[in-house]
Length: 249
Length: 249
DNA sequence: CGGGCTTTTGATGGTCTTCAAATCCCGTGG
DNA sequence: CCACGGGATTTGAAGACCATCAAAAGCCCG
Image (cartoon, rainbow over all chains, first blue to last red; front, side, top):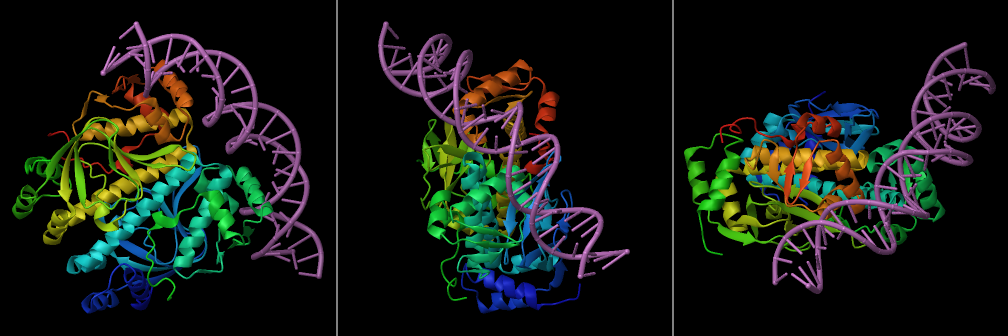
């Protein structure tokens, strides 16, 4: 809970400078943004549906997800968030949050008070625009998930999710050579894809048998990237990844 | 294609005044916003995936949807838009659009150039915030669709969609007494729910047999609202409908 | 009246779910 | 060091739900 101006600043500058050239005063404002560092163990709840948070956070490290509990005791995961993402920035404008937000594995977050973030947006419209844009990209990912869950078979659905996560982790430098840490259980995967855990298990075996992935122990490897993307019909356009700076990092 | 300052203005003032009290200068700015009226027949394409639109539009009347064509020639509808909605406002910040936007039935739209909308946002941050909020609500609807498609049975899935559309149409005064015009075919419903058209047909019959809905000929009636919402586990929270002003209209 | 789209019906089969139990894995405590 | 326990993974078998294929019937509009 100690005050620490470094973490959020760094992650946000990193993120926003991919979207547009930060002016000196914008950089300065970001550096002045107060934030506090929070560490969480796996499966810790950050927000519960119905909460009215008064702060937002940036994921510095680890994996976060948003989910809803369904009427029959099942859970649907709606999205994952990786380093640099702002999972709950919408609470700045919506107030009540309509889903749970949970740390999947051990996480490091930088928490920013709504007031500070709002002041930043008021003073720097281009930063506000960039944050707006971030929420629009998240919306685009939702759309792709609707496609994935609505129309694709279990095998393809899982393959697509693997492609997405690997691509997003690579984009922020958390994956290299198609290898990344991914603290997901097969149960998480079943909740994210709308499949039963048993069927996820069998589909994963099939993907492994085809030599497309290695997955287990919190680690994902994709030895045959072309094969997996072809199977998954994966086109990364919907992620709206900034091309610049990616390789430089 | 004629210039007409009335339509977009009126719809936007209507929409935004639900979210916050418009200051006189904000009202004035909205009234000064140039827009042109466009009428479309059913099934007319507004944007195609990959386009880079230079304008946005407000739905004045009718139904619009966004959709993607899947690899095997099928189509997934990701969302519907009713009067007052801004289906493509994200193009203001994202540039390329990643899905098709199509008129479902006959529509009336008010088109606004990106430049004019951007100028409005620059000059009036509270309007920009309100528009941002609108895109966040759309995101919330996406999340609920992921839940719906991912975890609910065909019958419940359709029931939920009916509840959502009726609620949204009522909120903008386009439904009364649980009756509304809804120019959807069963094929549209199948594309929106990820079900086969045949199964949609059978599920609709079941809903009718239970006395929950009447649907056909472009018209939806829900004689047993409580029964339908109970079946669908429908909780309208995720729509973030403004309570005020609704009844007054 | 005819053509095209939508809706409806029937029959079959595949994908995925559910239930149940065994195995594995890993951290904990005796 | 090993026994224990709980969660995760794996396997098997049965059946539900939904997709697919095919074709008939209904409907609207030219």
